[in-house]
Image (cartoon, rainbow, N blue to C red):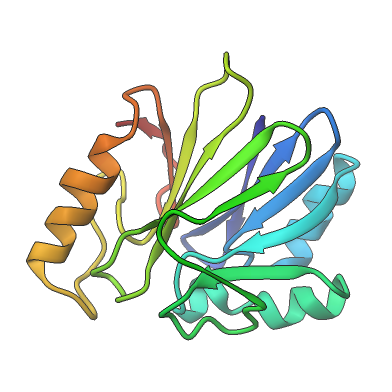
Length: 181
């Protein structure tokens, strides 16, 4: 599994998750789809679907455009979110496959928004897993409590995300740095 980060807007990040054996990729929060597709093309990748963490424009704002640029592409988003351009709703525990080796698990991590989804990604047995936390977890903080409560953020951070393996790489929606849980 390879992960490409793509700087977007002033302080956002989109990502490409790549199954290296098939050259298939999934985009996470492609707010600037032209940039995402340029990176995919430069690496010879086929974009298969989009993973959207939450409905805020700086994460989901590129979904309609990417659907125009890649006809038929699936756009995943939380089942209780109103994600712009969403074609396939996911709930906590749902799994999506990418290529031959990657499994993506949807984790409901509410508080920043009620239906916020983090995506836990595993590849081959010897590869470190990754989690894409959108605006739930940052390197130096957590996301603002727009729609939820402190109890929900506690659960999202200290139960759901903290239960992931210690070797899990964390990719957040802002702040490029990567950390381990």
